[in-house]
Length: 349
Ligand code: SAM
Ligand code: DTB
Ligand code: SF4
Image (cartoon, rainbow, N blue to C red):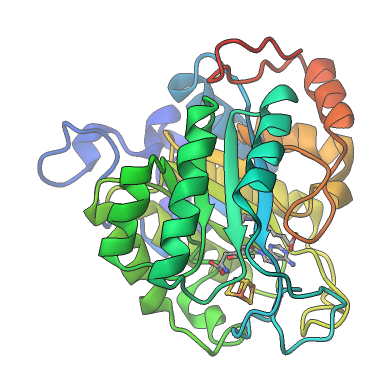
């Protein structure tokens, strides 16, 4: 029945304003708008229909069709006390990642300058912490100030965050906080035991409470079912408002982690996941995140068609590899995709 509803309505099946309850003048950012069944029905559409609808949504909400470039830096690597089953930085897994102290301010600023010179829009600083201590916040705040002064958008991912800490980071100039739901609530329990789903929701709500923009997504290809992928996207899309940035990571299976031997997800299912994210969160920047090296050019091109409009840019993610910047520039140029010019002085391609 839902299938019928979906196919009958052209673009507006993403929910026309009249479909939504209450005061919907403020667009689609309405809590509880998507059921898991509706999202599964999107996944079940014929591939071309899903791609068409995702592209229609994309062109409606992002008429410029530009791609945002975000560069990652691991400011504090390894030695993490958590047990996230995918993560090479968890101290308990023998992955060969060495634990380092928090980087020095000057080194972080050097990396940010290089990212800007290479054409990045956003600089994201990641730390392998369960949660930062207040003294860490002071140090990271200095990094944020310095990066912001270079004219880059700033993002940080430091683990669980209290409201007072979010406030301090915002005052330093933090534009986005990244904290992922990672997967559906029921599948989550088989991947992570050292903190709960509610802890993640609480951090996202603490970040929202101070008015900061949220970057929140997750990982697909960890062995979850399609229904669980749909439930994961429903949780994201039903956040009120939904995140401004949605990183969709493809699991990078790292030797030594519990998920090292996980069979890769069908690339077409990955593309479908991107399309459904685009349709259900039409104004969000949907970021192709970890795992791009394994996808190859053709699958990435399909992901852009499905509505992805942000990538991690630069040879390194946190501890694993990413395509060379030059390869990415060539791919975007071959596809005729412009980059987002938030650093107004840069002309990229
Ligand atoms: N420690 C902080 C936290 O967990 O929030 C910040 C860093 S953590 C590495 C950020 C995100 O990276 C995770 O939530 C997960 O989505 C992603 N990630 C980590 N390892 C990954 C892997 N092997 N493959 C894909 N994504 C991964
Ligand atoms: C996100 O969702 N993906 C990025 C960022 N947020 C911090 C991290 C990907 C990490 C991939 C594994 C690694 O390089 O260690
Ligand atoms: Fe630690 Fe973050 Fe890795 Fe989990 S994902 S082990 S919290 S660094």
